[in-house]
Image (tube, rainbow, N blue to C red; front, side):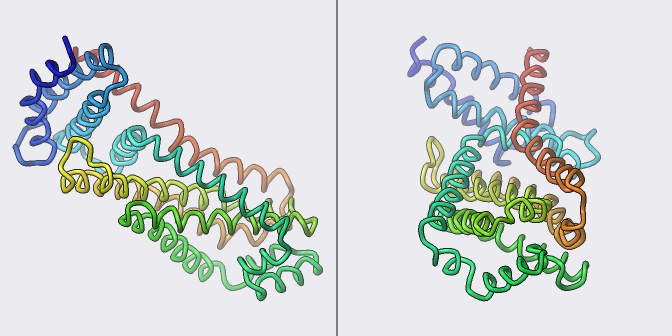
Amino acid sequence: MREVAFIKQNKEKWLEFELAIFGKAKKNPDELANLYIQMMNDLSYAQTYYPKSKTVIYLNHLASQIYQKIYKTKRAEKNRFFEFFKTEIPLLVYDYRRYLLYAFVLFFATVAIGVISARYDHDFVRLILGDGYVNMTLDNIKKGNPMAVYGSGSNWGSFVGITMNNLYVGARCYIWGLFGGIGTFYISSQNGIMLGAFQYFFFEQNVFWKSVRGIWIHGAMEIFAIVIETAAGFILGASILFPKTFSRANSFKIGFKNSFKIFLSTFPFTISAGFLEGFITRYSIDMPNWLSSFIILFTLGIISFYYLVYPFIVHKKTQQLSAKLN
């Protein structure tokens, strides 16, 4: 069957799916499950005969939305919070995985720009970090503790202040996506360039490893979360610029709802990073290498698994469930 004929034959059914997804047509969980089976059949057909078509992207998006709707309205589901992180977010991250790729490419590119700029322009670090911070850090390096800045203030005071600041930075990365993603690109680029210059500064002062042992105890989760928030901002911007088969209003509604959920999912990691920075990082200079390395790798492993590996596992389980239902 030609693709045009396939679309024409199923167009009314797909419109019914959209109405069910957006709540304009009330469906109970059993009816939604039936819709999901039909959608997966259409998706499988489209993937077989029109693998590079936009129809596949459209149907895959509808199928994932119906699946989430089933879990959202399922009577047996008691713990909504648990299901949100266990199933809903991983499926969303899988659906929007290319935006995570864009965010990571931007992150590594801007960090590299920061490193190169700091290496070839000796005034660049002071321009980015400020004379006060640079002079204070140089003084701390001379005293043998380049991470002394993290020891100032009380544990709880540092934890609360740092966490609020990190949530604010993440919110800016996300909300500025309303400007077609350009605002998110600008904020994320600033953060990446600053990080690159910051790390090169410690490398130039021959205390790079000491800085890594301190900064990345909390930085693994903190920086990774900002990258995810950048991806959420890109999703929000793309929903405005590229509505695809939806009206621009519906596209924005879907993009905002899904990107906001992904943005919210970073909160536990951002708060955890704030806790580590307020209570653990200040003692990094006295820690044995194995302990600081373990904390860094463990925290990086947790957030990397959740956003980069677990979504594929959940998606695969979803596909297997669909095959069984068929």
